[in-house]
Image (cartoon, rainbow, N blue to C red):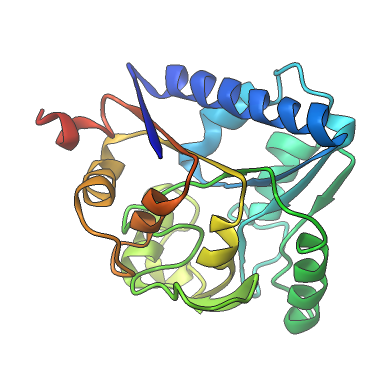
Length: 245
């Protein structure tokens, strides 16, 4: 089932998405005594995370995982997703635990340990963004819908790498790492609830393709349409092609 919400701008979208996420997280805590969540990063998640940390949630009962990280990029780099989440989320709320994707040192061991922790229990809420090329996490087209791995190393396509330059994380496309560790599509789909916060005009084509095209690895986000509880939050800019304006 798809629930689509269209807000006037990214700030209103962020508030709406955060309220939805907070409600589902609190529901999981009420029902099971804890909640497990997955967070996305990138420019499109700024407003949602800004509002989410303000929500009335018992964060001491929440365990956080995140989606992806570049291979070989130090945490001190401005584009590091570990750095991003520590600055914008984990330093601002008192979590039960936080598990980060580490693309440095022994990457295979890091993936094995992270996957084991993730698979201990189901994830309640996944905040899953959509990239300009339709990717989810760093599963660029054609995405591997069949793998049962929780995380794996993936190659990043040129459009994905250009998005990172466009968002200001890197100076040139040659500066963007060519590989990343990414949560895999099947693992993402195993979340009990999925929320996608997708603002900004640059995402309008990806949003349009996701909603109007058949499920296909060539538009990885179309897989989200098969999830039983997917909430898609758009603003007027990202929804512009759907609305014909």
